[in-house]
Each structure stands twice: as structure tokens, then as C-alpha cells.
Length: 289
Image (tube, rainbow, N blue to C red; front, side, top):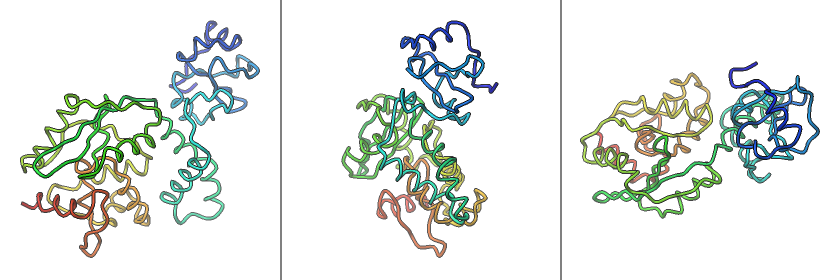
């Protein structure tokens, strides 16, 4: 039994047999013989007790490679088919370039689908947001109870934030709350003033394992210095994945604090930046004093 699974107690077994909806928020059960996990209220035929594993969350069941039941939808979220296909295709193309056609098909049907699905069914969260204004800087920032999750492009409407939240945290609520964002705004303003060279605020940054590896490598670039996409690819031990590194950098949701502006072309030229090249130039000039 995995560390995330718990025993099938009598009360849980009765809930499964009786399709007791009152237990839906208490646990999920997976069936070892089918590889599927369900809510206790699922109307599917009850499995044998010895074939059941109990999980507290959908993420735990997904981590053990069980698939969500199509009938009771235990994850609570489902992407439209066209969005799901697009997400899987993009993930495989960005993270597994150079594999054989057979490997590509296997990844597309198994590993990539599991990782992307796990990433996009995050438990609904409350996302607090505010407009940060300092001198000529005007950008939206957002955070969950776990940390900063978004820093937007300058002078963009709040629609940029809401569109991002809808993709990354489907079903979550957005609450305008300047007081909640104050600790994050404080460190960003200190950075703009040239008084801060590193951030101590917590992050709540969601992405694939590959994306997180890239974003961690960005945070290792010293203040005032730059690296190339190739440097980042080597840093994460994926030297042949330069294009995939570029895609992950472009997907970075928290500008400035995860310093993707410090990545430039191998020949020293400035390249694309989600916040726009003007912002990139401005940040690099700020750091170089």
C-alpha cells in the first residue's frame, strides 16, 4: 500500500456500497483491477473490498497512476476535448522533442496525459489580486493562500489575469484584495527602487515537472547577470531541449520574481518576453545600475 493510501474501514466500505454522497468530500476510492478511481457516491457496481484503495484527494490517486472515472468525475473538473488535446500535444512537443515515433505515441497516450491532467485539475483556490502601481509601473499581481502565483504584463487589462486564472485554476474565485497582496507588492516596489536583489516571498507556481525545473534554473541566475537559453537547457541537464526551454520560459506566470528577463539569445541579442521587450530592457537596465 502506498503512503498516500489508507485502509478500507467498515464505514468507508458501507459508504461505497450504499453510494453515500455525504462521504464524497471525505475520501475517494480506487479499484486495483480496473485502474480507475471514483467518488463514494458513484453508481458503478461496487468492486470487491480487497481490490479497493482509499485516497484522500484526486491528486494522490493520480500520482499512483489511477484514472478518474468518467461517470462520477472525481476530479471535479474536465477540460473540453479540444482543449485537452491541445494541452497534451503542446506538452509532448515541448518536453519530448527528439523521441522516436513509437515513444511519442506512448507518451501522448500515457505519461503526458497523466501529468497534464494532474496539473490542470488543481483543487479550486481563492485567488486574491490587486493592481500594483509604482511610478510608471502598472501591473496586476495575484496570490493564493500559499504564495504569489501571478505577475502580469505592464499596462495590460485585468482580463489578462482572469484569462490566465481560468486556464490554470479552473473553477477558482477571484477576489480583489489589496491588503492581502501588500507583502508581495512591498518586495516588488523595493526591487523597482533598486533596494532589493532577491525575493523572500513564497510562490505558488503550478506547472509541469519540466517547466518547474526551468523556472528553478531562472531563479539561480544572479541579479544583474544574464544567461542564454542554451545555458538554462544545460543547467537542467536537457542540452538538446533549447526550444522546449524557451516555451517553458514563455509560460512563466510570475514575471520579475522568477527572472525570465535575464535570459537572452546566445549571441547576446534580446529575444521575446511575455511582458514585452520594453519591459525586459527596463528590468535589465535597472539591475545593471
